[in-house]
Image (cartoon, rainbow, N blue to C red; front, side, top):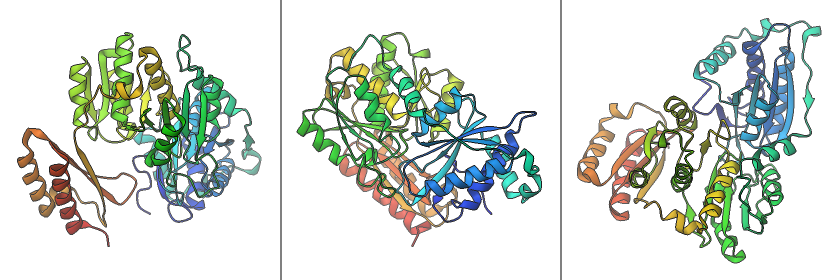
Length: 451
């Protein structure tokens, strides 16, 4: 067995190692053992998205937790941030999410939140992984009388919706606002429409009929074509596209143009600064964010910090540096004044609040930031050696960086969850950017590419 936990928990093709019933069972056992308390049973909430494999993994986790003497609380289908919220509000010892986020239906994943709603630390994950790989779990199970019981919770949607509505300022209203929502046939398919409808919005919902295998399938935050079309046809003021587990948001303006995560971050940070609520005037993003975000931050008097890629690293830096807003270009944003983790619906609330407060259409707010031409190519790889140790790749990168000078940048990094290398280039024009990005991608493919 190799390392199980990546940048976002354990992930892989469902029903195949490591995303199979045996590993889920072992994770359940290991969490309970690591978090075991004296005199009290360990309480763990479990939620999932709409993938067909969620049933198998949920049942296996439930079995593992109960066999080690813990009590699992089954939430059913709920967005990842909703599971973190319930874990925090009921003071559970942990929350477990069964989801592969924006990945296709055949993948699945397991990630763990602490009882405080934050993702587990690297050290805690390592302790769980070490115990799982030690082959000692079967020797640690308690006698039958000390096994746990499972409970199903039925009121979680209502509780989460109340929480979400409270993140929208009470002095503002979205009464009658036309909104189109794409739930990606995923975990937000009930919660998102109910939330905006209860706030008085005039909503239309698309891709909200999950069948276990249509999650993220040509819909949601990764694929906004249908949403753009419906926004224009419906004369809507905004379109909201969530991903499969509901922690990301990509928005579409009233003209059918996609608004990036970077633009949303800037709009919301500028609004917070104007209200005197932007702690330390600081916005945290990642090295993958567009150069235009840094330029815009200077223009609007915001301090900027770039973290490593991955929401856990964004959050770590936000806490360390004292920032209340941070996120990724992909649409994964954290508003620490409202929640401990990225939440697509909370993000949508803040973006709509900026539109209502300024009285400006989203297309105008989006102009606050100029987007530099950027090209990203994902290359399938067989191995993941340190890029700096591969001469064929480094030669091309160094040449491109020299030719770009101050007019662009290069970023080459591996995906934390897939056998993939991401090559990103920003430059002065689309043609130049695409040319250089392709050259580096070809070098990566030639050196370490998959078949």
